[in-house]
View 1 (cartoon, rainbow, N blue to C red):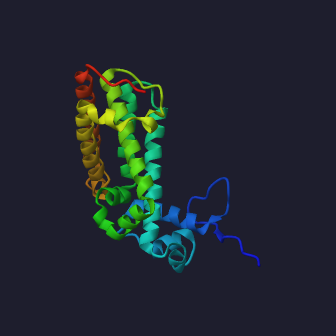
View 2: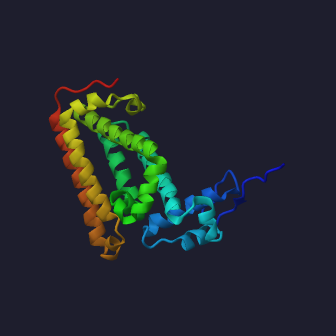
View 3: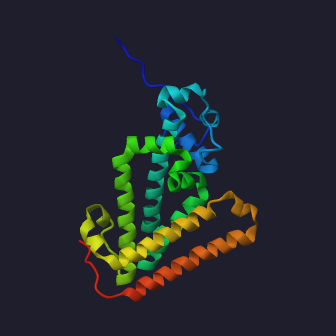
Length: 247
């Protein structure tokens, strides 16, 4: 008995340079990442995604059971892209504690501007509750690990600003002791405020209406982001004092 090879398809969206043909599942996930990122879950549809991928809408149910399951897979892919892109910006930044922290947070802001639909999905999961539930059912453990990794990286970057140093070991977050981090209540307090401030700014700046309001609104938002970063960096520098040693 012989089995046929998995079906592949050349998608209409951005083809990879290393292969002209990819599995249909990958094409559908990539198309959903783009469509939902631009339009949000409410204004996206299986028909739009199928058209983008160059397949029939029925292909979605065949490969993913439902449209909500496809959104769940695409949400996981989009979140991985977010976490990876944030850290890459840190690695590419000048090797000063302030520049690395700034790169991390500005990259988050820029990603939000470019993917407003996913910002809404991650920040307000009840906007697509079934898809969000499926994402946690399918990728819950990995998702929690990624969230913890990103939070630990932000903690280290903030602590480095306070301590006036750059942690040389860029894999520190992967082996960090959560109890040690929690014990550093000073930096945790600062990073919590920083995180919520960043989320608020990125959600508002990701709205399409911001651009429709004209150049002043976009300019003011950018200035707000810069001011929030400057204020936080100033508070972290002023904290100084004892600090945890990176292990």
